[in-house]
Image (cartoon, rainbow, N blue to C red):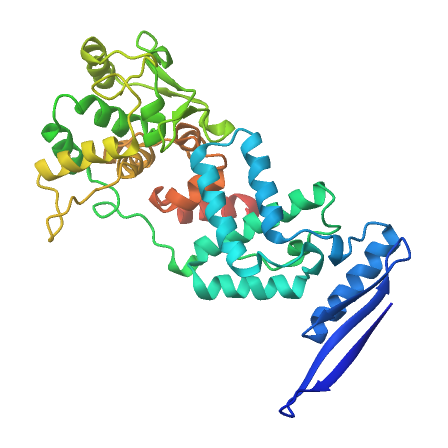
Amino acid sequence: MAVRRRVWHTKSGERRESWIVDYSDQQGERHIETFARKREADAFHAQAAVDVRAGTHTPVSKSITVKAAAEDWIKSVALEGRESSTLAQYRQHAQHINDRIGGVKLANLTTPRLNTFRDNLLTTMSRAMGRKVMSSLKSLLKDAQRRGNVAQNAALAVKRIDADKRSETRFKVGVDIPTGDEIRAILAAAEPRVRPLLLTAVFTGLRSSELRGLRWSDVDLKQGELHVRQRADRYGVIGKPKSAAGHRTVPLGPMVLNVLREWRLACPKGEHNLVFPTPSGGISLHNNVVRALTASAVAAGLTTTKGKPKYAGPHALRHFFASWCINPLDRGGQGLPPKVVQHLLGHSTLAMTMDTYGHLFPADEDAHKRLALAERALLS
């Protein structure tokens, strides 16, 4: 197995060169692969040597393309029962991958080549999207490795695309999070048909998909709590919560309970027995929730200088719920500890809760006093 350089001149006299890897696979068959750069040839040579010794090498001539591997990956994800919205995102990621390296054989993928792919993502799309596409590529190659279509996942050694912490903005009350006065104004201006939905969103923090998938059988009006057991995706398809943490129980206050008791009598009936269905009893779409909030915000006079609703997305109500849980009692909140807030929001990790809302937790104003007392007690 060897790497050698080939040099030649075109008819116009221009000097050209390429790098050739000449080797035999584990069956003793000879193969020749050509690369434009020496580092790519060296990387292929090193990996091929390891794979041949392990008996797992796949020659380029017998290797499938990245595009074919992407199609296999999408099919496997669909067989796992993933939601339509998730599949749509993965197909979008696969398209970005195919546009750049779809025609490349899996056996020709090397870590240097995929590092170049990573750099291209960062120069052609947002950092957040680049992270998602790179993650999907690694999953795609893992699936190909499981199928025996490639010996190694060359993307595993590629430097990950981290979130840009400097560009992250913290949610601000009155900008991203409605104030208490604004919440009161929104609820007061809401039409009777949408007020139960908005009130439940404000005081439970449920996501739009969870509100749209909520059934009356999940609401215990006697115990004063609701159970999140399913959700409706953007296409109106009912499914399980996105994670195990999404399955949770949320307590209901007297005001919400009274409103829900009244709403149950007027709620449209349907086969899914939903709490917030369409007027015909069907599954509401995300835009229905958006319109309920935006219409109420405009009616309450909460608009931008351009006349747009100040709070256009239902996540603003979820942000308010989080801040209301976090704020101490003397500021009109519940003063709940972070772990409880994590559970109520259905976050999979405490880190997710703290990364999103950690800045809202009150500062420890007695820290210096407590530290001084502890020092004296230790050294006295």
